[in-house]
Structures are given as structure tokens and as C-alpha cells.
Image (tube, rainbow, N blue to C red; front, side, top):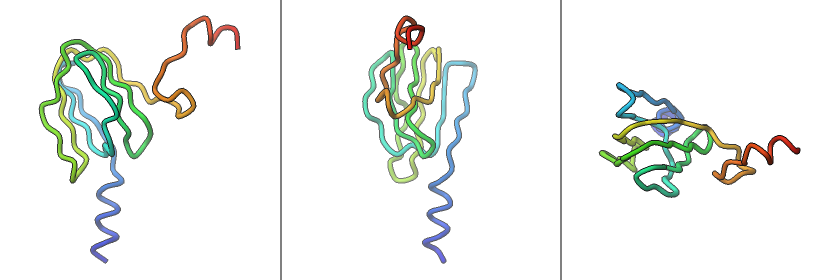
Length: 96
């Protein structure tokens, strides 16, 4: 029974943004890449692309899948797997 409780706990995914300069996320499986302007992460609900300025990882708990990031947060996007985290240009979308 304890094993099923662990699965329920790890399947949660949520994020909380405070004053647009700090984000706390749960359900993060993996951080694929990051720098001071972009974080590309895998969550239980799909791939997340976080963009901003002066982004810095404050806390990473790999056991529970919790991440805390500070900096100026400009956007949070769930990315389709088919683009592999790369956004299509406006013209590419227009001419589909």
C-alpha cells in the first residue's frame, strides 16, 4: 500500500509564481537544459519551457521533483513533444 501512496505523491504537478520573480514547481522529472534566460524541463504533465531574465536555480530536490527558480519570469509554456522544446517561428506556423 505504501508503494501506491508514493506513486500518487509523485504524480502531482503544480507551480506557484510569486511577484513574477520566483517560481516553485513540483512534479519535475528532469531538467534538460538551463541558462540565465531559459529552463527546459520535463514534468509529469509534459515538457515545460520557462523564459525570463537573470534566471537562477535556488533549490532542486531530485527525490521529490521540486524546483525553485528566481529571476524575472516572462513566460511558462508547455511544449508539444514534436517540437522537442524548440518554438516554431511565426512564419512557419503561418504557412502550415
